[in-house]
Amino acid sequence: MTNTNNIVIIGGGHNGLVCAAYLAKAGKNVTVLEASEEVGGPAATREFAPGYKASCAHLLNLLDDGIREELELSSNGLSIAKENLTTIALAKDGNHITITPDSVEGSGLTAEDKAAYAEYRRFMTKFAGIIGAMHNLVPPRITTDKENLVPMAKLAWKVRMLGRDDMRELLRIGGINIYDVLKENFDNPLLKGALSLDAVLGTFSGPRSNNSVFTALHRMSGNNSGAAGAASIPAGGMGGVMQAIAGAASRAGAEIRISSPVKRILMDGMAVSGVELENGEQISASTVISNADVRTTILDLLGARHVEADFARRVSNIRSKGNAAKLHLALDGLPSFAGLNESQLGERLVIAPSVEYVEHAFNHCKYGEFSAQPVAEITLPSIHDRSLAPDGKHVLSAIVQYAPRELGTGWTEGKAAFSNAIMDVLETYAPDVRERTVATELLTPQDMEKEFGMTGGHWHHAELSLDQFLMLRPVPRSAQYKSPVDGLYLCGAGCHPGGGIMGSAGKNAANVILADQ
Ligand SMILES: Cc1cc2nc3c(=O)[nH]c(=O)nc-3n(C[C@H](O)[C@H](O)[C@H](O)COP(=O)(O)OP(=O)(O)OC[C@H]3O[C@@H](n4cnc5c(N)ncnc54)[C@H](O)[C@@H]3O)c2cc1C
Image 1 (tube, rainbow, N blue to C red):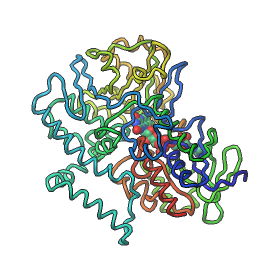
Image 2 (spheres, rainbow, N blue to C red):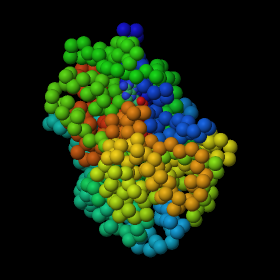
Image 3 (cartoon, rainbow, N blue to C red):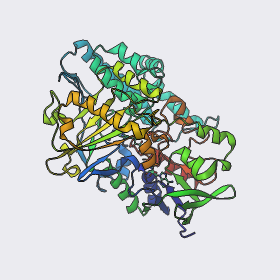
Image 4 (cartoon, protein in one colour):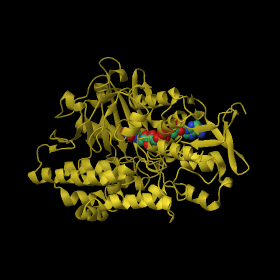
């Protein structure tokens, strides 16, 4: 054993770093061990072609304001290149519609659709606020003691305080699908398509899947210094946010070691005693916190033999089939999207022309195929941040769905074909995009699993759904960031409140550990 630090965090994703920062601020001796050469997991900014950089996670829409302030992320270098992006729902004929938190504009929209949009934002924002208010709460246990009943009662009270009509509406739509809700409210296909994309990004679901209202609400549940769901482009890519959080952790005294993959968690009797790295080095610790996904933590790093069979079974049944691929294009100049000027090109562009189109795109992945006509969330971050591309050049960053973790034909063969399918779709909106492209990187969920160690390459580490939420996340009896093993804690996106760059799982885990010590 070469080190006597008493708290070790496996993984320097943003949640591991946030957890480290809070623990170090409380005076704890913390070491973060990150497998990769950079912290941040899929949120790290990487050079994907000479001079061109991008991060897989590209839009900041959930980062908790409280964490931002408490960790003084601005003084630690957090800077936003473009705030409050407008969403532009692309139409092939250039008659796009623009969507902001306050309004929706564009040809073909009726006065009824515009009014319905204002009402949709009103009730969705209100309902999302209930989820948002839970972000920094440790999920209560299902028991009858006061300590757990009080938070449950507070939650029930928040729902009741919606008022009778809104409470009924939340109960009615909370478990159904976004397709039905959008159909009830709107006529415009482009508007419905774009709003349905928000419900399915990063999940294994289509607009007609149950839970898709819940995932839409989750996406809007952040308070990222703006309206519900407001998205911004961080300077330096999402890696800029990671560096700021790592800076806060280091300043507070945490040690962050990169290129330090953990091979296994060490046990002394029934409690953890440290970790062993791939290179054989052992580090002793009375507390080990894992930012790796829960399946990796329990089944691979700890070993199922150290937990009860029922717990191991539940962990192996966590659903985490990744579906989102990431496309990075190095461009020799800005592509021309029909109907968009340069300043509009810097907004959030979505390809989801109708809710039916999105559902068809999803159908493929149920059968181990990629979407023949994928949906996409596109940004050109280099318009706002010149550090990401050489002079005069640009980066196109797109989340593309659907790309199943397991492709029937295998990704070795399938990758070029999927890349082609995406470019074919992009070309229908931006005819010169192929000729402007000098290098392409396409990361499938399988690549992300390999590169960032996330089981299934899943955005949330574990599917975000009502049966894997709050006190059921990641599995019952470990929803309070504790594993059944003494001294082993969890702090990643697989815990409440799920994935996205928000930091709450890391902060909540730190609070639980501090209370235990
Ligand atoms: C394609 C894609 C696009 C996304 N886009 C967005 C977006 O635009 N906005 C947004 O908010 N979110 C986005 N997300 C989601 C977001 O990136 C994740 O939810 C978030 O990164 C989870 O953070 P985390 O800290 O919990 O875990 P991770 O970021 O997964 O970090 C876990 C860390 O643990 C490390 N690790 C794993 N095993 C070991 C080991 N054995 N030893 C040492 N280290 C280990 C990994 O290398 C990694 O750094 C996206 C995700 C994907 C996949």
